[in-house]
Length: 387
Image (tube, rainbow, N blue to C red; front, side, top):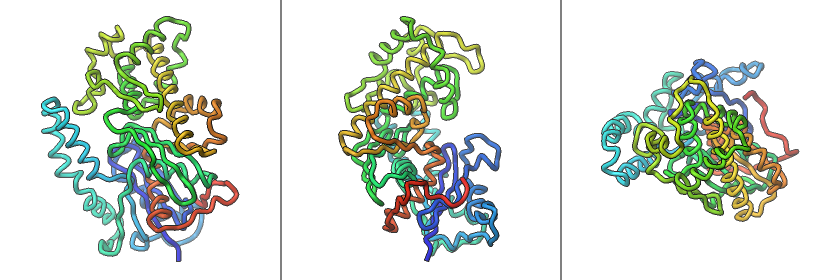
């Protein structure tokens, strides 16, 4: 009897749904493809409908799958743990951020703490569901990311690195995958985050956080590598903003950042005093100093990524590496990882961001919750539908 699992990611950015049947990726799609809203964070009701109607959408005949036929629906992260992080963060930084706390907590209590009910209500718009029989599960954010990279990969054994802004608590994690199992070995926790550091520079160079990071990466090559300014920026970043350890773990000086309890990424006055230039206004002309700043943070990011990769090799001694999370979309850093030949082979999840979390959550439940074995077969990705 087939095991059918629907994975869902939503409410932050890049919401998506993915359908896995007997361990194979049958259908996966982002909600933005239907709503035409880039990085749409809303509940992916259209994506879920498309997954249920996968036979027609894959060019085949057949009736749509019913929600009540699913063995499980899995959400890609754990909202209660995320709420715990929110409370502990505001407590740790108190009294700073009291206004943000007062505005955020009512929203969390009213809406976000009742994810289970909200998910059931949204699914109920598609068809009547039997809540007593329909199994609703919640995966950990970084496990969902890691699973999205490891299970579709051709490797039976691999180190798994997830790097992003933040999940529940984890911002960078190193795991080990073998067969059907994934074990998280080491993690870095909020507020110290490479993804948030990169997003802070995305913000300061005038681009939109959570969508403009690729522009910052694309701007970096326009920096003047021969100029003293780039080296000066790198020195300032390493001296005032971040402390980088040999294993790739980092410590961010929160005096210069505002994302933990504030409404902005950085303290603009302190950054302007540090770098000598104000935050670039969106759509303003891009002058050379911002190109140099982009090159500086890109170089720092690559240095950190390589250190994390070397630490993953040390911890696992695996021959292969899988990567996911938003930072894994930095293809320039990925290129350096390949050229360093720390691992024999590297497999990076194409949907490395939160959209891929829907897929990873479904695969993790299939293999780890339902305890199903994994066959890497010929080394090709097991996918019989459309993505």
